[in-house]
Length: 272
Image (cartoon, rainbow, N blue to C red; front, side, top):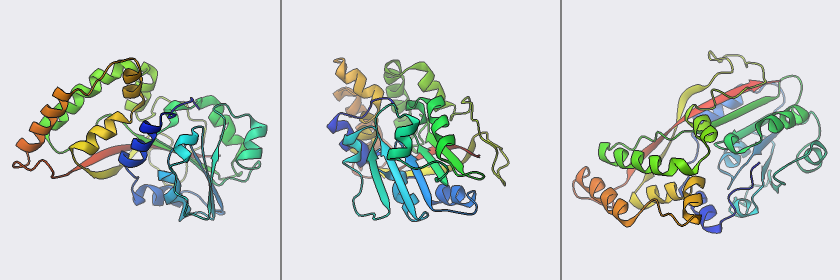
């Protein structure tokens, strides 16, 4: 995994502003695991949003990330979740030592992070630890097209997104925007999924957010942080004031009123 999310301010914002994923998503994934449901591995767990949900479905969860700063914000009250800081490049012997023995993992998840991984290496790791037959891989993410419920606010968001784009690699931007559709996915289709191993696009993350939370969300992005490190402030005071005016205009003068922000999810799921 790329050596990312080492800035304490960014990591704190990530834990505060990123959305959780809907129970329907986890129930769907869980329904596609058959037989044993003992161990799940959440890759690039960040501050543990997906690991928390997995903890109620599996006997044990190992949640890994290469950022100790991210792991430091993970919950500590889950007795069946083991959070592990792993090196950005993880060898198969280290994988078996730090994460799980061969053939012991029933489900592997990657939530809004596949684009930061060395994907061929990760898929090799998945094959090295998944239970055979039937171990499941589920990777998902939300793209750039957030649904904010306000035409003017969404226009401002699109403009901010365009200014941030040059600070993100084109292949990463394309991968995220396409919902990982172009990723070579070396797994078999699971039963009951009409799309096969192609993206499943029927889930939505939601979070009520005010102006400050929405700005905080944008500021957690790696491209924004790269621009800021280069001395470029992409979300200027003028942009913030414009966003506040748009928020008030469409909410009857209530700046503090929150809006439901929706994050369309694209899921790819398969098995060995």
